[in-house]
Image (tube, rainbow, N blue to C red):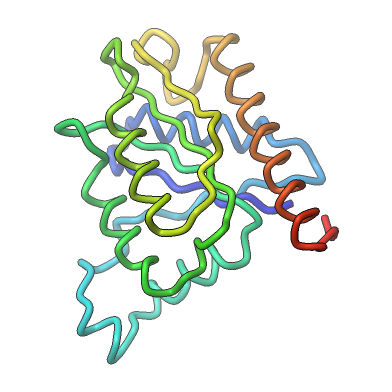
Length: 185
């Protein structure tokens, strides 16, 4: 099972990037979690460009999403929503259809006590409109600066919750495969 991890933060000391790295560490074989190299490489979405000359980097993102069995999206919260860089990536994905019916798990880490609740809710609504299968389980990490240090998730309960979210995502993939009659691993 192949999971593609997307991070909505570009900050070098990102709490959310640390969560995504921890998820990659916690993904047991034969599952694999590949972390997207960074959404900052995408140009700003432009429907005219999409229709006339799709940028190679956008085609690569669409191909990676299409090849993945599931997505894990980790988002910061800015102004009660997700980041502009993640929103831009989603806009590039709308026209391709690769995310349709794809199981997606959401996580957010925030120094705030809310743990990024509003960003995850916004993201779940947007992904649902796009046709993704957002799983009901998610992970919010409030007061994340107490649980993440030096770019690593240090809080054991948070690591366990992240591992459980990955198991829930794998279960959603298995259910989707069963429903479609596809049983390859």
